[in-house]
Image 1: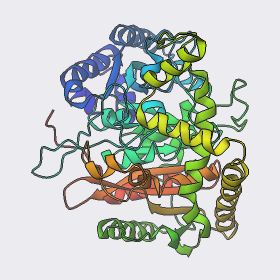
Image 2 (image 1 turned 120 degrees about the vertical axis):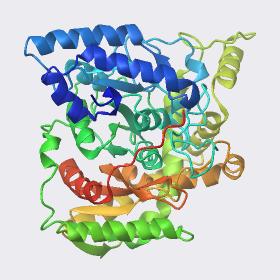
Image 3 (image 1 turned 180 degrees about the vertical axis):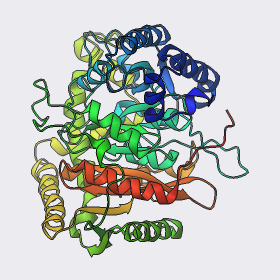
Length: 493
């Protein structure tokens, strides 16, 4: 029998139904794989083996009774940003030391309601602030991929680095993740996995630790396009606890897989051809265009003129919202508390000790742009730019474009501790240059593996869609996946 952990969600689902193995056997296979690999990859920051086995046994009982949910018995990893009742939830920050919520996030509750099994909590950049998973209090997650002939440790991308690393290394069948400026799509591209940031409002944000509330959106990271479609169907829902969640029916995304692309119009934005873009990214993009033409789609050039303002506008809006959202962490009711001579001193000492450098940097930037005298000059102006970015996409869609094809990352995965990026935060922020427009406009964006670079590392392509038309992205991504094939790292851990 195939190694259980190498099965996709779709394959495992069918074999569980056919009773070829039990949910408990599948869960145990994953727990064993995690035990063997997590020391090297640091993908999980908390494991829940007892809970996982208990959930798997309950799944086996439901399967025997013919009452299977859509994800019955499928073992998943959960990004440490999602509240999980009575289980470690710290956003990988020192300031939330020991925090175990008494409630469950809506997205994870939806997954458990469909029979999924929780393996544990996954590593991430602290409070989802980062593009490499190096700002985690628990140390960096490590990419299971290595460059040809090299033993250098590479980042899995961020902020959902643990989710991407665990999926790529087969330490879970799929994982929850979140995307504020590319935090699902960039790690997926770096690890040869599939990640989708759905339309803003498609998944509830209740119970997800907030970074930038108008940009954050939950989505899955999976091994292939079909698995991502299966996961999103269960994750998405309207929720009375989140006023920004949208009351629209959740389609059966899996049905879009394999549909024809004939009649589909794909836009290629000229503004995504940035100065100094590596030739390999340019070549991959051209290859993606050819694959879509071969599949029957029409490809047209489009313009998104305000793209060049997206990065600076994003790095005003996101830190501003972060400084407001993170004001609640003060050492009074939960998490880390550092005693001081009075309450103000205690706040200051707790926050100074509890937040890492990158989080402190973003809180300070955000507080500055919201302060009296600067609000109009920065925050208000950034929001106006955001409206123009959104309008660019609307104009393209009104002109008949169904989806947009673009790069995701300016390169393949870089080294852990890359000195150039570590010493210059702006260079690290430039990692998000292709992804943030999608968050600013609230659109769905999907990352699909499309090839390997000269070093043998995965590269992805990005598909951007109309609001709530994720099915178009799934069927288009499936065509790219069929042409490119799937990518798995050689095991070294």
